[in-house]
Length: 150
Image 1 (cartoon, rainbow, N blue to C red):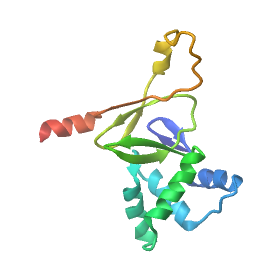
Image 2 (image 1 turned 180 degrees about the horizontal axis):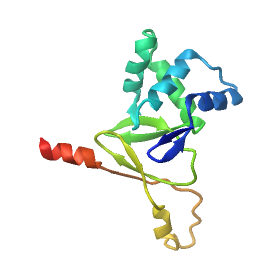
Image 3 (image 1 turned 90 degrees about the horizontal axis):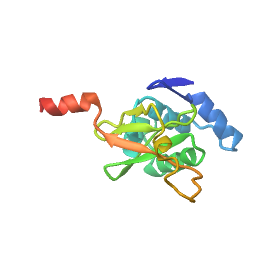
Image 4 (image 1 turned 45 degrees about the horizontal axis):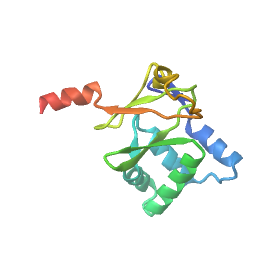
């Protein structure tokens, strides 16, 4: 397992093992796709993944990238978010329940210290909450400073 912003995430071998258990084959292209996501400490676009994978596999297509991202997402091995109208991906966290702050400029994520749902307890009335997701978007410290300098 890898440490990502203080949160434990799966490594390539663990992700491939999860895929194998679900009946998917281990391919070198799939390994490279997963590694390209892990190489970043932020959300990345399919185009960024494609560009990195094409360094090793020049013939790989967007279709291959999207098909693998869909499989990885369906199996909760990668997380997907929308930034600037584009889907971006990162390897899923393995730790207990938590949420992220996401920088809209660089895509870095930071763990929220508490679940915002705790603040909303009792506000749902007779509505039974069965699940939730929270992502808060803004600018990280580095991107704020970069903006001041420009």
